[in-house]
Structure formats: C-alpha cells, structure tokens
Length: 139
Image (cartoon, rainbow, N blue to C red):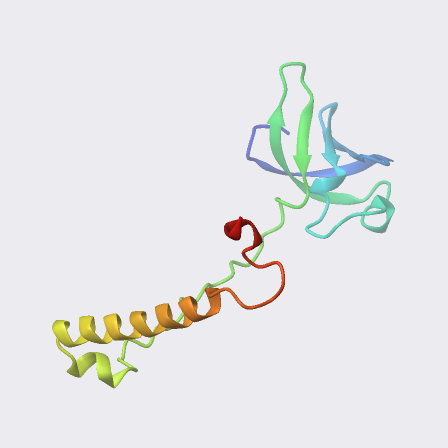
C-alpha cells in the first residue's frame, strides 16, 4: 500500500506499547498510532481498545523525513456531524414603555433614576458618629 498523508488505509496491529500501537501497513511499512489518536475517549489502557494482530483502519497523519509514519485510528472513523441549531431569538419588544416614550422622555427618565441612585450613594457615604471616623481631619 502506498502511504500518503490524509489517506485512509487498512493495517494490522503488530505491537502495543504504553504510548501507542505499531500498525503494519504491508510492503514492509510500519506506522505508529499514538495513544491519543486511538479513540475519542480518554485512553488509560490501550489494551482495552486494541489487541495484537487486530485489523484496523488508520488515517495517515504525516510521514517524516526519516520515514516515520504517524497514524490515527480516531480520525479514520467516520464521525457523524453534529447539527448545530442556532438559538432562536425572540425579537418582539417586551418593555412596552420603551416603545411609547420619545427620546426626550427616555432621557428625563434616565436622569431621574440616576439622581435617585446618587442620593442613595451620598447617604451611604456620609460619615457616621462612630468613634475614630474623621479623627485625622480634626487635627
């Protein structure tokens, strides 16, 4: 079999290590499937997924200058595309006041609410009669 990047091939597991599996592609070519490319799930023990002499489909990820072939079992399997449905947006106006008010009315309403909030903040920031408050200012 001629190994080219991106091509899906069939091979046989020829050896399993703790970091991946060696796949015999035929014609004396062997590639490595890293443990992270075995399955979509977290693979703690590769022996749970692969056995020696097992036939597998692999995708050729890369071929190094030194002839090393990187393979993936995970990318060779056809994965169903998840259809993403866009969120439905309710464009109807919920606040009836915003429809009826003119710009001047909206601005005056904003100014009134802002003034009320400022009064509350000023009341909270007034010094109290607690001991020690303003001691340095009296000296």
